[in-house]
Image (tube, rainbow, N blue to C red; front, side, top):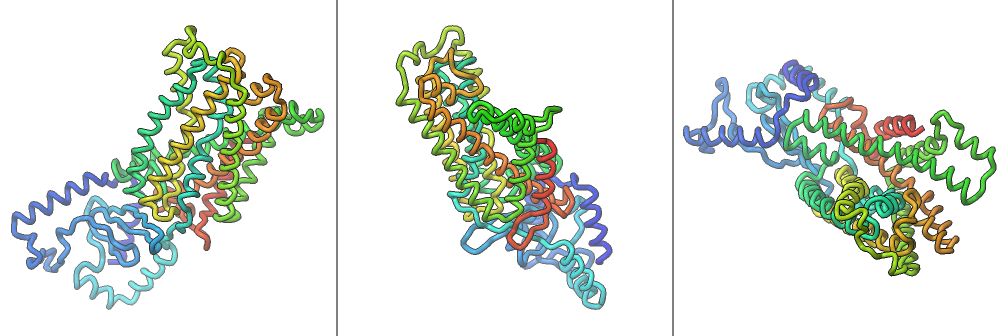
Length: 478
């Protein structure tokens, strides 16, 4: 029996894409239960015979069970991960397509395990080497909103506003943000619904796993890696370039310093530095990285509010006409909406930390909608203030607000804006380092990547996965 179970596990690992989507298995089991009921087998008093042995769960449908005392069986099983009143998450487990029976369902198999002196030793050995670990639930609603806002607000405020105003939409830039915000809101509603029903780590990977099966889910995980890991590398590299530009323009740094920070050959030492620093911070502990994320996120929000209020105080109504420049037309607004949608990427980072959210079924949907509301409000207000402060033909497509403040003769505001952008942008890199190991943890739990990525330390931090993600991101950023 132990050998059969071991071979089943081996086949399951060697063929990870044989699992069926959840809806297929649910439909098959419901049809099977209906057929058995019509044959008179569905009566609880009648027991189904398998090879001369009786079981009383032959037509049991999938149900939610506590992971501490649940037993595997054929079909999908939801194992609940609960920490008291703090919230629950669950993962789905499937059996092989051959439909092997799990040990302990019939009396003779249990009897054989009792007489086999090696059975318990093998079971203990398996439990020792493949423990089922759970992420610690410690993220409040405030923490989730901080991750969502911090991971979303970035180049959208500092770069895209100026680019869209100068090249696509002019004073009607805020309409582009509203259109893309509506599209992001519809997507956010989907994420909110799914995150409340499937509050487990992995975001889109977990949802694709439940709806489509493992192969589409694995492809989705690859795309999420591009979104988080490689985009984090790109942000780190962009931050390194901004530091060098800030030192050259604002602080008039010496040529020796600039040569050290920009040696050429495509090497970016500052991007390497910020990648290493964020990785070390996340390796240091979950609470520390959470506190730093909260701090930098809301400093960034304060900076955006400062820029927006300053722009409204310096607004000239003449800069807002014509609202839709004839050289752009309505099509320019739509082109601007396509470009501005990039500024909303990142709010789904909330779903990747679902396994660590307190009261996940409630707080995850709320945090997603609150994040989108805050981000959209800031984007629209900042767009109006920028085009009102400076004529759209003169707005810098690379550094909109600092150049606009400088043009209006408010140099100190320009310096604060430029320094604030350099100071707060690394939070996007930090969130990428936090998110990617959680995605790897979900993949490891499902057996799609090595189990080392599913190992947690005493604080619930996936250190091996974090180290791997940090090294890869650092290499790409440098």
